[in-house]
Length: 75
Image (cartoon, rainbow, N blue to C red; front, side, top):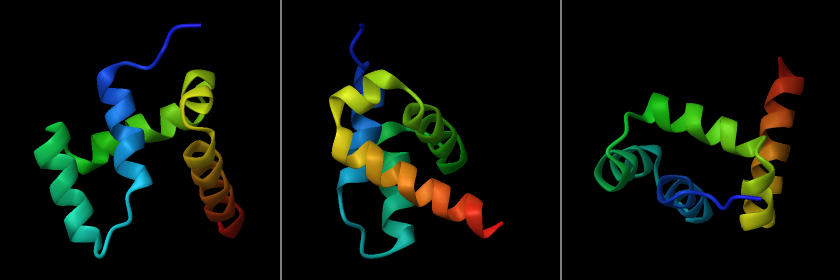
């Protein structure tokens, strides 16, 4: 199994952090990764379905999967 690339690892690292406000997170996405927030969330969503991401950071990936499923259930 291949490992995650640097950008994928950086996305998961960003998600491990606590954020005081949504604006701070969006700023960090732009400054650290050079991505628009919309693209960041597209990449993050794809990572949540990637077995390599689960192997790399199971706690973060499982937490985000639960959040995603809860949001889907609300719809």
